[in-house]
Length: 265
Length: 241
Image (tube, rainbow over all chains, first blue to last red; front, side, top):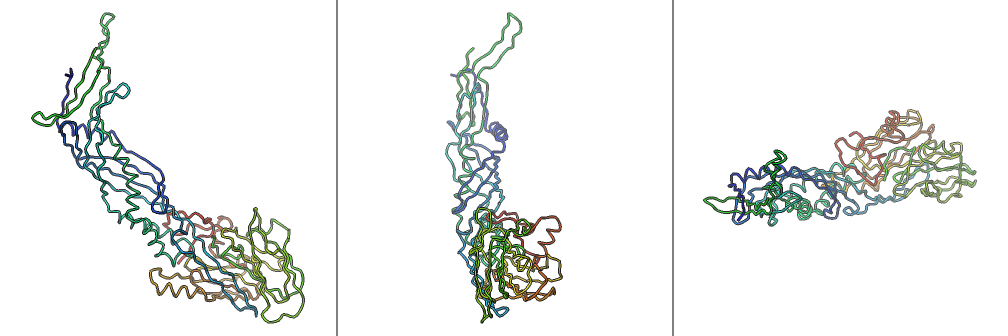
């Protein structure tokens, strides 16, 4: 039986969670991934907010409508030779100054273009977290750790993001010499190559780690707690050591989060 | 691939052709665009055999290549008949811009004088006003259009137009040498006789005079935020519409 027991109800747990989420702060990541046949380098930042929690005995905290606001900057590198046909300008002959002059055929090799895209959205999940007790250094921490990854629902449909990529591509494509007549073909080919599935496959692995790695601190206490400072040579400090912490959710007229501490001196 | 509209510097989208109506040995160099003063060597030769010109004459092609940091002409030496034409061109994708300069300026791609041709393929639509960077009043305008890429009939019409000739014949230092073309169509500037002119995009010259350096032009299109790799920054700029 623990010597010290602390309990908070759902209302108190909601407040604690809000503080804990605020402490998490913006999370960032960067890297490079394939997007269809193309390569995209990205940087992403995410922040969290939640509308409330449900305490479920014996050890589950359900966070309702956990919202992750994210903003993504990515640079899509597209080798146009992969999506456009090779195109050759024909040989032309003229008669001038009494001579016949012919120019050679010129075949166009398309460049690689880079399309920067900035996009912000959110995803919202209801997820279950399990209470987890750890001694981290000299601190006892009770955290809520994600139990299982829920399916992610984006706020804006992937089709809308694809349309945004298409719109961003147009001015860049228009600046490529000789591409004008192929503009519609190029945009359609880029979007078809990426596709909705490709976009979800691109965004999912970037955003999932932010959710799968979620852990919120619920309770924290140093292992050694000073009860009394030294008063004099004959009144030394009085410390207690928290030897063990256990956390659970118990129904006691209402659901409560209970933290029990075993102490020694 | 570069796409600068300036006869002072040739690339894959240009040709320079010269008719040789006088017999003799004509030495020449291939130099970086606007770098004619850097070398006095004339390693390449056109030997013109005397004799009456017959028929249309023949065309002889010289391929310009860029290897180990310098330009080479292949073949280095050609023998032709009086009245024949030599055409210089390059098939190399990213060849730096170059000029063909004959001894004593007998012929030069940056100073077009007599019975020579400069060709350019326009890659972007718009209205291009050209001037003579060497100071005469020769000038003109080329209006380049591009089809609506979603309209199949227009795209087909465009493909057909690529095989047609767009010709500007220049005599003297007159203005008003205008032409219409479509993106991808070869425009021939045939200089019948002129005081050593260049055919230079007015904006290129304006940028040079503003201190932008040879051949520098500004950003492609206002609001373009993308970066194109595989092209150099020089020369990619649509004209004012």
